[in-house]
Length: 56
Image (cartoon, rainbow, N blue to C red; front, side, top):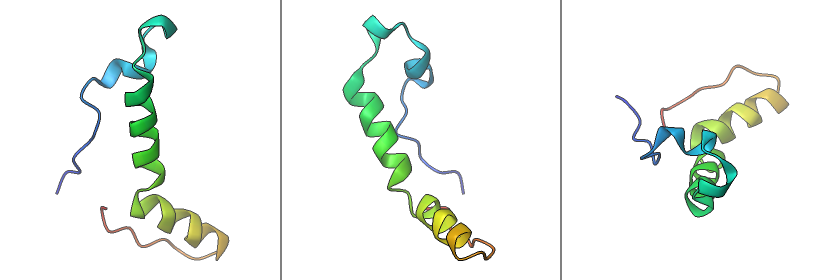
């Protein structure tokens, strides 16, 4: 099952600084760090165990 991405414009992060939609970039970044799989990966690393990703 493919994950739905909040990125509507994939090139947003490579635009010239004057053209970047900073609110969109912040939303994308926050959604990555709030992702359950990201949290699981970090927790598994700290606990020195294999991560169990759920696609969320």
